[in-house]
Image (tube, rainbow, N blue to C red; front, top):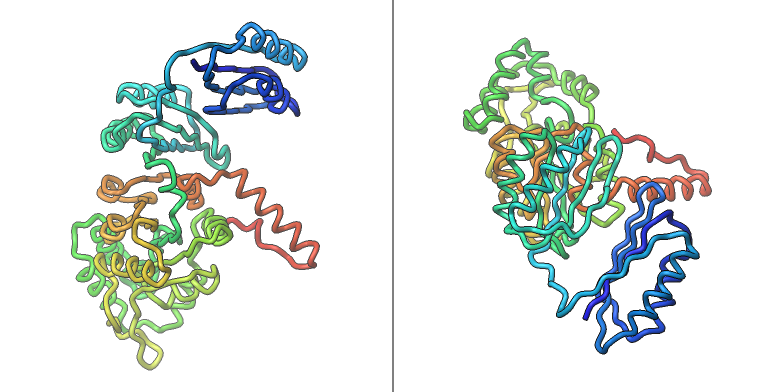
Length: 407
């Protein structure tokens, strides 16, 4: 026999200890416990197993008395046989600038239509975006992902489906694209503007990112347009580049949690080396512009970092970190990121072209790069609490902090 004890009402200290003190007087074993508090309202559920016939009258009387003393409502229901085991645990993460009740209803309906059960729902963030996570069991991941991808388009929210359990917690290396991912815009287009060929270069960039042109060929064509450009333009573009919103928060939090972080770019080391040093990244690789007598030659030096080169960089970083590919995360936006995203344990499309969104495990359409944290199960409250602790420690040591800069 099983018993489900549920307490609801205004939350207050000591509810859990008082309830379990009552239950401790009976021959019961705890199978499951879930507690949710929303704006001070508590729902506490305890599932218990009974090896022998319990004194239900006494349990009901004692639990009801404790609930009344705490100004809570109590409900006790009984069941028979073994409690159902959760099968195929999944995380379904729903994220948007706003989440309408209709969107949640539609998503929950899709989950139910796939024969799955929602075991729990929790909030990961309420600013600058809202993120809700469902714990789901009994679903086929591929079928549910396909169904929810359609719902994502209909409801205009981001939805990610990932395996539950230890898989997500095992992620240890995050590798990101740079242009239009870690930073806003494309460095090569900014250089081309200074060389007087901005529109032509931008057209090639867009076509290459959509996968309509071979990336290496398009890269050489654009670099050739830069021949003769004074290398002072590199400093100008470097000063113009801006990190994506939330980039510092993302990297600071990942490093605090022991992740390794790297960047791999079809752009240029003249920009990525500085970014890696500024952000304290572990790895960085990119193409290198050839410079002679203070001017760009219109050529590249060294190997080309194209679509295949990005995937190889991910593998190299993983090897250097001692991390298997299954524990890596790759983030990108363009067609040249596809191989890297496919090779990683978790591939994330960030404000990406449709082909990349279709191929990735998860897709984000919000401008905040730190939303990646929510896909790893890290809540906004946890991030802000850790930032506050670091700020307090730094203040006590007389050091300024950069925790407030979330660029």
